[in-house]
Length: 426
Figure (cartoon, rainbow, N blue to C red):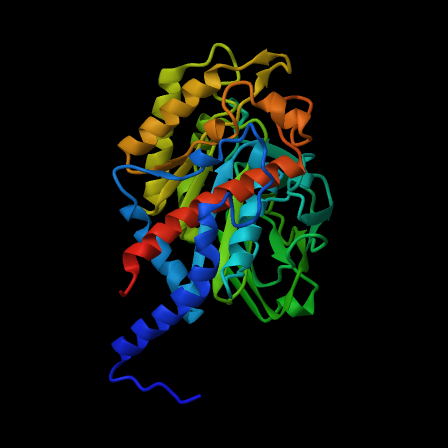
């Protein structure tokens, strides 16, 4: 084949873009005329025609995000950080984990790192399904759902505290039926007081670089080789040291790609994340390119919930996110349909969803109306009959959360496809 010559770099870039668009997008995005690129099962109660991200007044706030994706896809350069916060629907990481899997495996060369995690097993709660935790020592927990407890949860919405002079934490990422991740950087977010225990490691692969950054609030280990596991020892090395508080761990690498951080707490409402003094600061350290908020279920679960307080709390949360990164695009997902006490239809989910969508539009955020997409009022019963929901009619099982992840991913790709259409060089 004869080599193509270009008069200048700009011409070359346009030609490459044309070739890429024809080969890649022509193959994948033309199937949007059908139901879904991943052949999502067709359920009569799901409103696939409503599956889109709503942008008001327009989608320009997402241009920087889409441009970064283009750079990853076309040049294999850059790292993109997504942070997804929420409640129990996120803590287990099935919904957010599915989005991570889809994003990182769809875009060629897009696989990044696992990102921010919190080892909830330390505080007797459920971990995300895709990593294993073991530990020694006695640990006490603190969560943002506890209104009157004196503690300082961070971005994770939780913290783990030990006063044992010797303790340890071991974490290994699971790769069975899930993409295998590895990392060569470990950032341990913890308290940096003089009374805090030290972090040590007996793992030689972690000793290449050790950075204790008091001003940033984390200790970082840079490893000699990539790995999917690590162990840390927390030790008292001075009599002045009294305790150790863990806020979270970020597992990262130097590879180009998409890192999908998640932070969810069982029972959390919007107000719960306003009780996290370190939320904005630790979010800023992750430098998010996109923030997804999946809250509201617990706000409207009680029949006596306060709609005005709910609105005010959403506004404050938006402010806190933008304190971390002023121009970051924010997506609000609405709560799913549910039943109170397993028996009574919760009509207030529709009200909460309308409030979320309105405030998102008024504050130049986007929204994704899961409540209407899944079928609206009473549709949770259909999800349960179809084997996708838990018997509490509040949560979903793995199949249900995976379907939600597929739906949101498809809605995101539709928005990205519209951006690509605007960028066509012809």
